[in-house]
Image 1 (cartoon, one colour):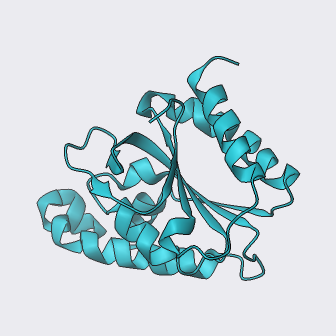
Image 2 (spheres, one colour; image 1 turned 30 degrees about the horizontal axis):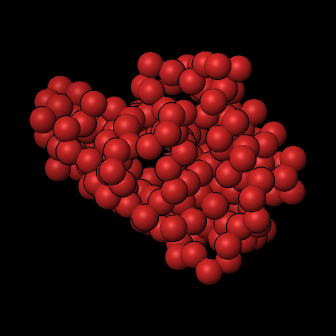
Length: 182
């Protein structure tokens, strides 16, 4: 149980087991599970352990996997052939992708989930270069009544989140759960 992901699951389980404060803002209810990008496949295999931790402590769980959101969006886009021929033309459409993704996810969130439940977001690494994780979390967090758990392949230092190897990160009011002490 000494590997990074086991430590991360243990910390998450401890966090989830503590009674939740009801006076937190939407952004403060967000929880970033921060892991090394090299652990992506291992983490995906262990997502059921996070779900089990949530459910064993009396909370319901909904997983939203956005891994293939961009390719699906591209495939459905009217100009996809032109974008494949000249990818630089696509840059101006990234904002539309981000907005449409946020709206789609808002619709997918189970409306029966309450303030004692979890909506988990998997696949945020696939947004790198296309959309902002922080903007997506800001859009989704008011819709989630309980905890928005964001599986985040990156780093967290001094209340600053950085996705993958991004040099610039952003500050956020979310709780960060890491495999090591911060």
